[in-house]
Image (tube, rainbow, N blue to C red; front, side):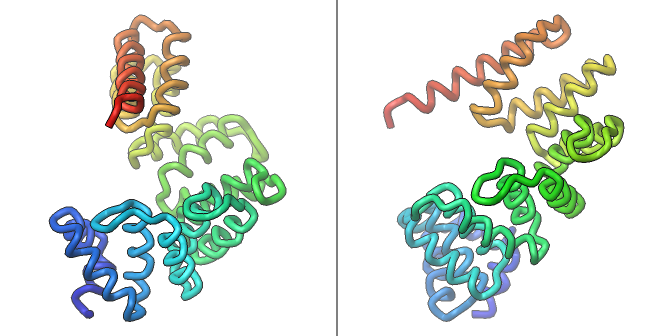
Length: 254
């Protein structure tokens, strides 16, 4: 299965195959996973979780993540943790999730670092430890994790468990925005608004609008409407419209 191994290792190639012919890709992944191909086992968990080319089965997805995690696959460890944290195919167990995230973090996986930091920052499944959470977010950010960049910026701007350094925090917001995180884009837009750079602020607010989910957009909409700034009034209204669209999609019959 040399060809399959190359496709699995190359995310672009495998995603292309899944887009082109998901059922065929799923058969190839199943066959390779049964033959102990580690990458295929981890990917099998993902397509089972997503229902891509195969019937969705969160219980079975969790089992395959565990199989690959026990063999040392960092992303499988992270995804086993996600299943346990959120109750995908199993009972929610944040403490057990933390164990899997720790293993992924130990292997320097950015998502493992980020997810473990989230548990530490909120005290779910582990004792709350903001200082440790910050160190993990910082490491994930250094590895290029866009969501962690925004959170590092927040810690630095607020002076939470580290000396306040708003300028450094703003630079992390910029990096997060440029890396594509919608929260980072909104955070950086707020900095630009405070600086009076309306053109760039509008750009990043619109980027965040395109990528944000409903929970984020509701909060962002409320903040923009409360600010009542004439320069971005049209964008605040656009956030309101997008929220209504997403609410309508969620309540429409299938």
